[in-house]
Length: 224
Ligand code: CTP
Ligand code: CA
Image 1 (tube, protein in one colour):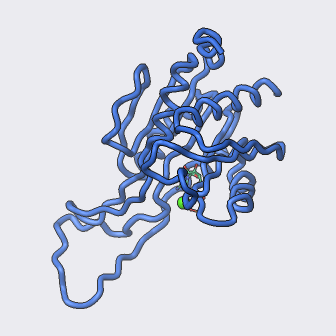
Image 2: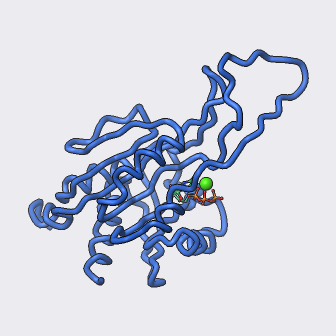
């Protein structure tokens, strides 16, 4: 496919992408996070831009270079990610939630550095908002895509998320598989659609995976 053909595929489309891990503070020097690197989301943002889309990237990673031509917004907590994504949600044509959002955050954030004491530390955690779930409830024209990084029962969990979150597509990956881990430059994903169709991709670079995902979305948009 030529550069120009590719470029047209998402022309005029507004895409909202989230990437990376969130960080939930415990005190001024400590936080809870997860192993998401943000690379998959950044690859999606870069490839979507190349395909002509107007891209907003809401990111919890602060170590990756800003993709060319993309509106990049850095956030740190799940709550900040919720606030920022909701500003763009109403006008988006496509939303891809590749971020690994914290499910819990410390209920109390200590304003001062916590000092160690004898014995165990128990930290009470409270639930964060499920951004994808909220989007699914408010969805209008948006084509809503979620990710599901799993270690087991991949297909079952992916299908459950598709339903529960009212998404149009869930992209699942087995994070225990060779070549599909967190920090790497490759991935192996399976796309589960609302219409029950399934598309499995082989081991590919995250950029190649991103192109295939975006092409699949274009195909599905054309079906409606
Ligand atoms: N997600 C979100 N907000 C959250 C948690 C998850 O928007 N607070 C989104 C993720 O960005 C991802 C999808 O929901 O696109 C699935 O995330 P995942 O962690 O796999 O699913 P959960 O619903 O959190 O379920 P669990 O962690 O128990 O598997
Ligand atoms: Ca989760």
